[in-house]
Length: 183
Image: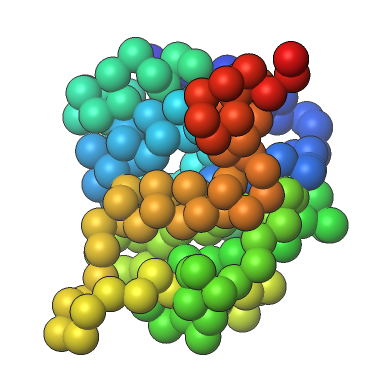
């Protein structure tokens, strides 16, 4: 059984200017499921770059994603090369990494950015680092190694959406006080 969701047509390139979330060779199904749920809730397409460290129909994905995965726009890519071949050349690839030179809240996101998360066990290899247009880290206290990949993805995506107006669009026409903005 394949992953649920609205699957991108395999013969078309990935369109911008939507923010996107991409998982490079995820190896923990619960984190992939949690990020499918995040992507569905924020209405952001998600790219899953194979190989996975689990069977794609893993019940642990379904448990974490609940029924939200069926509402996600999911694009599966057989490899890193396949992902790169389908990407919009105008979209920046923003890698979230503990080795990032820019901090999340100082980085300026653009509407067409793809936020890329690495494997939970190993991050991403150097060739992926080299391909990234930006390397961003989430500031955490000294002595802590890293955040859970699903938590990091949600934090970064929320900041990117905030900066690009995506959170306002999710408010459905309401302003900060909860009043209708279109009246």
